[in-house]
Image 1: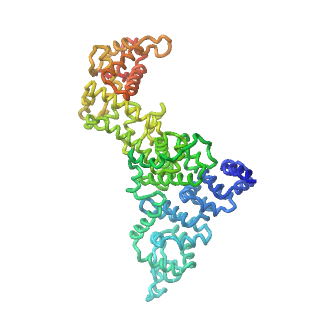
Image 2: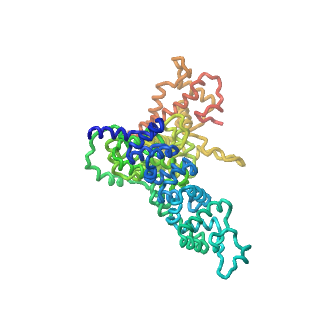
Image 3: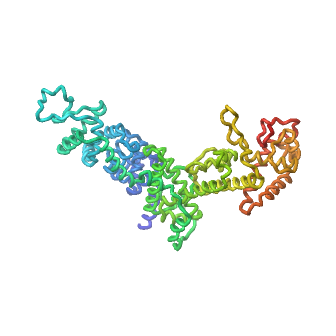
Length: 602
């Protein structure tokens, strides 16, 4: 019996929400209720937010299941379902869950958004009276006072006033003949009257207390105190004050990493790759690239408590990023953006610290705080940014953004990405059709960017140190009374090919723009007919490519670690020459307007 039971558990654990949706309703309900409530929760959290309500209502005890949902997951589920359509969920949530939802959904930065509060009050009126009564009794009195002041004004009948004589001076609606209410609009009237009736019926003493406070309190003071209370609550969910939130981007020094890893050094890590566990990830963890090493490692974890902690910490770190980046806390797309950033940089941190060893990665996940992994990964991008800044920049300081224009294509875009306040990755380093800037997601992207910086370093060393070309010679001043021209019309590869052509034509190592006739002579000297008969009709001579590499290395005397960058730079420059000029070698004349591979004398 025990063997059978142990054999059946993983089958139940592996049940997916897709299987439940494909099954007949009766079968789906039976399958779902054969799971423990913890297993039901896992299935629900793995499903897309907009599909969860249907799953939850399969449960024999949906109240218990709903109240086990993490507050943030419940909030996203309700928002994606639609507040009005999510009444079956809202009617069953706990006060603490509702408090979190109101803290997130009814605030716009540091101000309460009354229209959103009214929407939630309207939905609450559709719940059972006991649910509304619980909220009225437990919620902050200051919150009720503030909302009341926004939705109505109160006129109090004094003891020395005759109700008949002052009837035309008082608002028309009263509950007790003492407090008269003037509502802000019809929506406020429709929403507030049922709440006031219920409040009076539930606790008349509280009713009178709240009415007096509403009359005499000040909106600004109430909102300030409510903001303080709200900030204290949401800080526990990863939404700290801005100053604290910015610490998520704090640089992690190498010695800090060593200090964190030191206690783990003596821990034996056995085994290699393992099969995926039967546990499922939350739907929100599927944000971003499927192939992330981090996500693959999370799927190996078979400790539910550890997996829950890791996912919770990743979400809290994303919340901190939302605050630090000034994103909207209520916007699902902002959450996805922040979480994609957190998963990406945490993935880099895990790849670096584990050296991409699966067993080591699993142990690190179970041991280290996710915020530390994020910071360790983000520090890799900061290292790239700082390295770009360390490559001698004195010569560029008077020319603003000229440097990123000097390097064309992928190189320039990479510099532009790293020049942002928070470094960004240029996708063109990963694939030919990539053109977007985004956050780094993998160690491969860090290494690809590092290779570009290697090329930038050797190119600048070649032009400005070995060849002695002054930057000012490459800057074209704007024409008088004309809009500013491109800040850097001369670019690295055309500059190199122009100097190379001058070397071939005259033996002089100098930057002197070419004439069309000189370009024809240069092409005739370095190209040879393509014997295969394929396009292009002419290709660069192999021996010329070899001579060019040798010439550059003779100028630079590159160190061992610079060799690959020198090769890559020369190959890219010659590739540009081949691409633009392989079909022009036998032309009787050249239209220099359409040739950008070299710089012409205009």
